[in-house]
Length: 226
Image 1: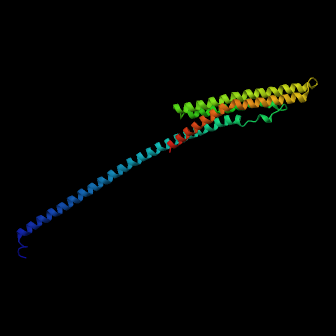
Image 2 (image 1 turned 180 degrees about the horizontal axis):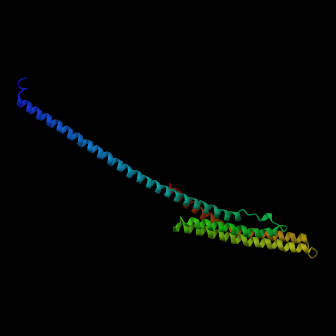
Image 3 (image 1 turned 90 degrees about the vertical axis):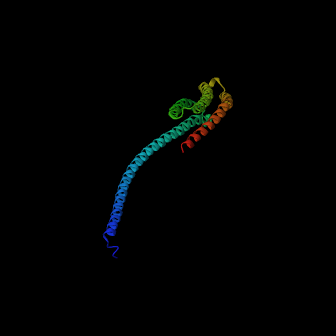
């Protein structure tokens, strides 16, 4: 105990305690400062990350909107050229006769309307798709439909002509055997219809093949957007 109470030992102990306390506080304030800096850094990094996240979100939304518009344009184009083509395919000349043949003239107006709608839809789709593959396929589809329409329109005119001639003969029935003329007209219309079916078949096949390629192209575009 006397040893511990000596001035020398007490001095040494005081010095050791001083340096221990000094080291502790230096370490404490250093750590506290470091923690404060870390907190500030984390806050700044978080802010930057949020800004980047927001910008990426906007970019993704823009990309999504663009792809959605592209998809809708292709769908609309597909629907419009289908409507134009299958209006003629499903059209029945058998519902017309010498009594209402003049209504065949309305077909031109309907075909013009459908072609116009198809042209608009095609132009819209071209805003997004203007690569060589798309241009080739849509050209083949347009050629097939136009050629089909030429055969369709020529047949319509021929049928209309037969009904018109028979109507004139009916007005002058005293000069004709109406039953014979009607039978003759029916045979002519039947022959025109046969010629029509044989004439449009190559263009129908051309459309089917080109349309198959267009469907594959549209599906590829949709999958690339996923």
